[in-house]
Image (cartoon, rainbow, N blue to C red; front, side, top):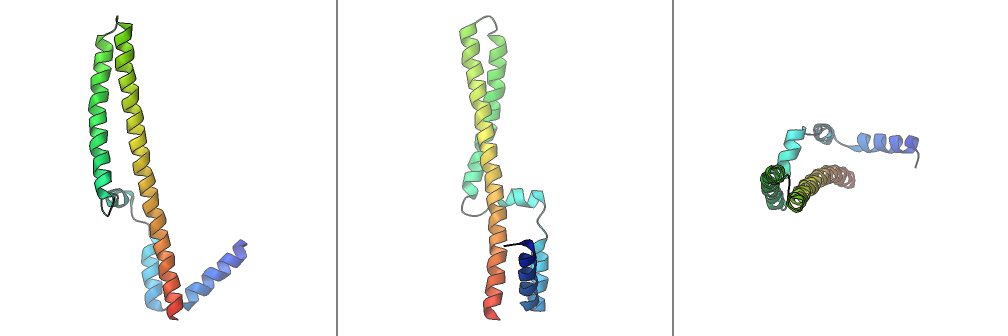
Length: 128
């Protein structure tokens, strides 16, 4: 579908809405700020998983700092340096994966918000 057809469809949908629906949709067009979006990932069905992810991240940072300290203190022992360096790399990967999970959860919430707006538009069209 071309952009011209999409804009005509958007205009037709907008014209078919009542003034109350237009005002409500205008309020939904403003995307919440980042802080509100970030705090919303701790609510809902998967909120407990987000809390566990934050606890995991805190533990990984503590272990990462400790493993860096031990890595520096075992300087002449190559085997010990590999052991503590490997643990540090494991912690960094854990931090990276948990951050990726939180970012994907944030993106999922954005997509769901847009889908709910579409559902509202479809429902209002069915009423008319």
